[in-house]
Length: 323
Ligand SMILES: Cc1cc2nc3c(=O)[nH]c(=O)nc-3n(C[C@H](O)[C@H](O)[C@H](O)COP(=O)(O)O)c2cc1C
Figure (cartoon, rainbow, N blue to C red):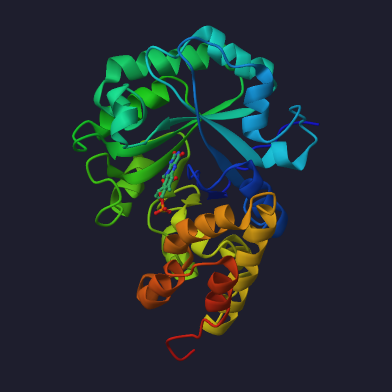
């Protein structure tokens, strides 16, 4: 079976470390199959090259890479690499396991990651970035994408970055339109996504702050980008991809019902954890599960002492505005 990459306006579920582990990814692809792709959170390449193949496959969520497997067709392995940890050996190990599409993280803003010259740090050093991109490109024949921000401290070298990435043979860019310094503050700059699409000969997937069908309609247009990735908004509305393809609006009451069903799915997904761990997980997700105007609800949920209390509180959500 040939690997087919749908680059015609894909809708992609974003990688989110601490959320999108392989249990979560499987649940999303089963319950919300309209997402075209979902990225793994990042696999940190190791400097001493000591990953066993079974560790990489387990991280990805499988025992063996199999192109006929729907999961393998839809899940993209994201790696986090530094100038030190990028080696032909590391990349060939992934290539030899059969992966058809890998993504390089050039966006992580965390202090720990950038202090090791990984993630968004690489946007500030074109020489080191070039070394990493060419090492990956030379040793990986499959589809190779990067997920980047618009720059490190600022976006002054944005055009140079786009040129370099394209010249190094990268096949697709996902652009979270903020700099490292901006973290998640302010608004994502969709104008820069539009500019990048105009300037690049490779597809640009736009990313940042999409929460609703209306926003998808506004930004997922050929004039702006060649597809959209949704992160926090996809936890809030995992049904968003289906809404897009069905062109269907939901009322607030319908969304509340869908959200409660999603929360139950999450609990089922992690039923191997004890109730304290599951309550902790649900509390962690609470921040993303509700819209910003629902802050009262969030604080009530965060005060729950048991899972039962939490779910009871969640299930009596009433729409705060008239439909
Ligand atoms: C909790 C969390 C974890 C994240 N982990 C990753 C990651 O592992 N790899 C990555 O490329 N981006 C990661 N991101 C960034 C998201 O993929 C996305 O680019 C960002 O949240 C902006 O999109 P959004 O506004 O749709 O959420 C993470 C974001 C959040 C909130």
